[in-house]
Image (cartoon, rainbow, N blue to C red; front, side):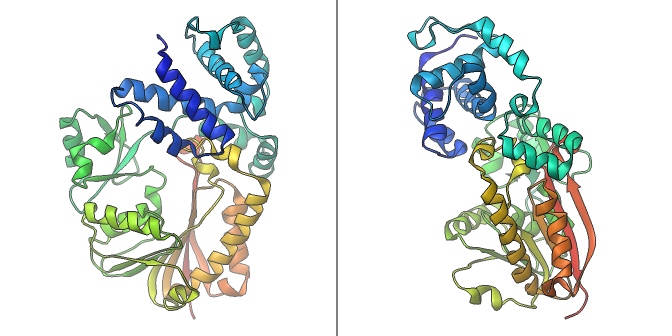
Length: 405
């Protein structure tokens, strides 16, 4: 592989924003890809994947390069040199890459590879927390899986087509996919591609949604004609799935505290031809109180640590702090207590997170059932999805039923 100066410089600039200015990797990479209209798909792919790789392995590479944050520009080039050397890429004779100790890099890599926190490139506190919650063996396997690049998975929009016809539509646009056993409407790309530029996407035939995330709406056991409340709807991936499962019949009330996310949901719903979604911003406590005791089904896709989706958000492990995990557990408990009141008698509720920590998942549900707010609920079913077992994001979901009021 021949390295091109303008592409490598784009990677360095993006890493500077992510590491030194605490910017989000996905947003900075998207910004970088717009810098030069002449870049082809291979150039763009190099920038995105190289940046994500260096973010993912930051601790390991920094240890090998013997550099510490905040990273100066020469430091960032040293991280890049480590990345290239470990991939067997010949370094050009640029002044920024002079005196790269290639042999020492490989030796140091072999040495550090013996220790999990370096091998999997994880902060000490997070490594300790993972062992504490999942045990040594399970955490080691899970961490290795979460450091793999996430596959691109689509959900066929059954309001407009089905999985088989979507597969054909994409094939005609030179994108090959395969079905995934056990996932009703999912297709996985054989090779990474920009699916957002396809006619199939513009026509609303699919959404990009990880396979594990696609299990959540189905877990809620909705039926056409029901009244369903999605309490933490965000940009609405699960609301759109619910609309398809309900065949556009009944009502979905999509709530969120962020109005801009709900605006994005409206845009997506229009493209998907999902007509039964009503968005409401939670700007006062009245918005939620008005809904108490009115819903057949309630989805609580709770805010969480996001540890189950590190493969697609590798910068999260550097942004997370121990106090955030403590605070998010308190928020989850408050949300469960408040939003569970929306469920009517004999109605059902799903509590879900994209975390792999039992303290955010099973233990939250157990504690809820012991509290006053959960005394009328019983646990019907729960699903623990681990990345090393499924090959997809780590997720948790619990189905609860309100037995009386």
